[in-house]
Length: 182
View 1 (cartoon, helix red, strand yellow):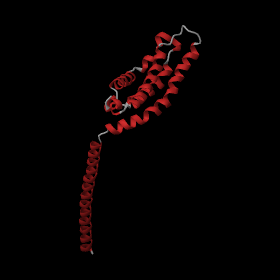
View 2: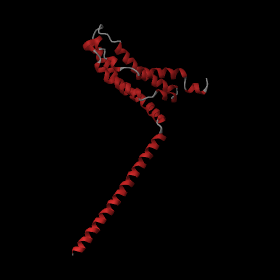
View 3: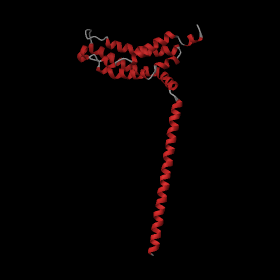
View 4: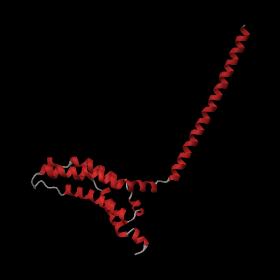
């Protein structure tokens, strides 16, 4: 096995991309299922599902190539756990007993996935963002902003100087007029 293969298997990368895209593209409103389930719909699942999806959207698919196998596996496992929770809701049936408790358990499972999913993925999201942010562009934008501020300051200073000169001229005229009257 080559050094590249030890670092990152194309198969693991492909599986992780597939898992991540599946959740990133998932329509969380499809979990509601109002027509199928009536009063037992999963409207309450949309908020935690949206939050889970938002966490995963923060991890760009293009950044996955940066990670070795062990990190890809962690990302894939976390992503699959979220998708499996979605699938359980999609497979929910009112034909089985204890509907209210089973429904509540599935919604609670989504809420309970938030913290571990965030904790597992936060380092990867931070690293990916840091690697994909174009610091050159940020620096250029910052320099442009500083230059704009300097230009505005210079313009204001010139205006103040002109106003000072005009005020001094008016004061001199008033003094001259006052001296003529005395």
